[in-house]
Length: 376
Image 1 (cartoon, helix red, strand yellow):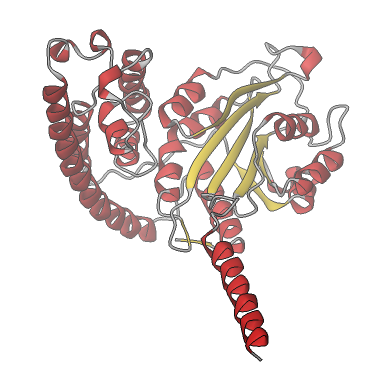
Image 2 (tube, one colour):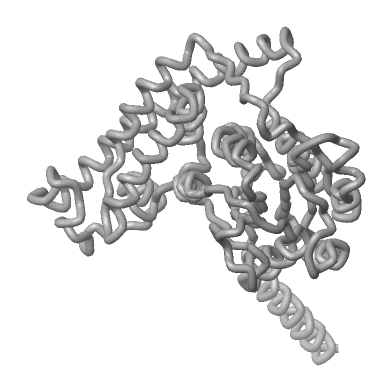
């Protein structure tokens, strides 16, 4: 009996030790963050200046809306990639297609690349640009990511040596949704097979008038946001090899936005106050917040001149001061934007006018996001 009891006890101890090990064993797979991945495939042939201008103007509004997205209790990241196609300046052997930007969360870089686009006549091969983007971009394996392509153009969807149906089959295998935006008449887009492309790709078929003037709603809060944006810029502390050039690019993208319309710089300022605007690769405030900076290794000559002769303690203190200033400024911008959004919503109820590209893209993204359990 005693031997039997000892044997039972030893078996139980072995059972609990195994289960305790299983419980405490670190997971081999880290919890993956969710990401909304949007690839823009833009026709840059000679008739598409209006489309490019709409994309430039509406980037920040789209970013702002996506900053409110949630996946459960988590807030997803945002990455945007950019292709141009149909431009005669691009290599014919590659189908007049160019990757302008791999998936990136660098919002200033995305803006810079959009403003670099110019138009010129060419052949528009939709199937080929879809397939190229599927092959070249880092779509990843996370099943909870929302992966979307928007392809916009104004010629037949069927052109080129690669059949669009084959390209869309590849997209389905990667869990990528295909949305099509025809720049022109709704029925012309249908006969040009743009709707068929969206139907096969699980996305939306949309049409826009690419030459329609964008209607920006001016609000009583815009001037205050613009002033706050200038104060916000003064809280950035560049560092590292690319620090100063990225700092300069930030100002350049402000000027690019302002060149389109004063309201666009307001929308950009709101984006710069959102969680999606992260510059930890070159800004000490963001880097410190993410604990991505080793103050012992900072090259002082690559800091702003005022910090060249400061001690490590003094630099840390300065970073904390600017972080506090930034938080306060961003909070004020968010509060003003809430009032601004309310004002715009009332105005839009009174008017049938809506922004073309911005409106159709956001409607599609939100509908498709909800199917994958994203919410606003």
